Image: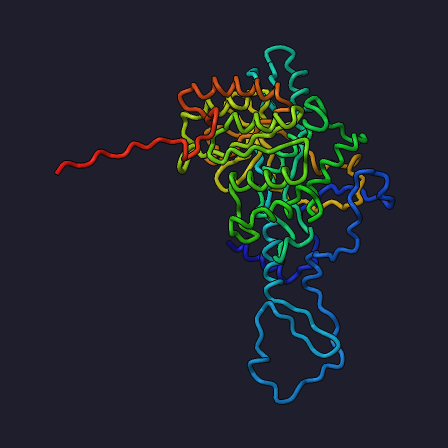
Length: 436
């Protein structure tokens, strides 16, 4: 408690001090045309760094008005005290909020649990890895594949979200980040292919840099936290509040379906997929790709052990993108597993928001994690969201065959139906009249 109090006091009294956590930032370039997919420059946008919140302007020629009412002298914490020509900008609520942000940033850290590979088979994005022979080579291939996953974490010093004071999502945005990672993995498969791999210190395809820029934390980026929260207003939650898997799945659905034409989100809000609705999409476009999001709750306060084998079975689907879930009070992204261990990417690391003019096609180290961590399946929180990506109708037909077998299990994760029933089609028998 003394350490926490000391850290809080240092953050409040010394706001201009540098952050404790340093990240490898992308090198900015002077010519934004070097990347044909770069966003327009945001140099005219107002900066919201922590130091500016505490900055006040110089006051000169201050004239006090006579006979001022006591009520006019008393103002709320969020108001700015102003005089004629020069003003003194000071807001107690902004100061406290900035200190709160810095506390969240200071204490955010990934969950470290290094994975030790065994001879058991492993799956990653639905791809099988057999470690029974050529163990070292298979492990290296698995590591390269895992490190190619786009790692999206907390960010700090980005433009304020809507009308709030938030310039970081540290402490509350982990579920949004986990869902962004699930979406990013599906976009990599969609635009770059399932066999694409990340190579450090090498210039990558422009589509790769475009995918990363879609997740930049700026209101103009298609899948930024700003855009996602625009679609969260229906939940009537304030910015800075934690969101669940079903809520973030809804945000992703709205963001993608309002921006992309070659990829469509099917959100099974009730845990049921309806074949006729998906076939209706393919009737309009046979080449359409679909990302199915299935938010579920597999227990009340903890995950029921009966679902363990069914969870692993879903992760073996070739169409599997993984799980956006986590453990209590900590969201994680699980793209694969080995044995009873789920391998994860942790968003709980506050990094500086990259510059819009950075050469992201070559320098993107902050979007990839070099370690592989895992945790026991039994620790999983019961609330989670499964993702399945179908590139075309043929892939969907294969998925549906596997799903048909999956629902025959004793404890299936989700359900499938041929058609969604309408209330008008249901026949309700009228109760027989009671005899007197």
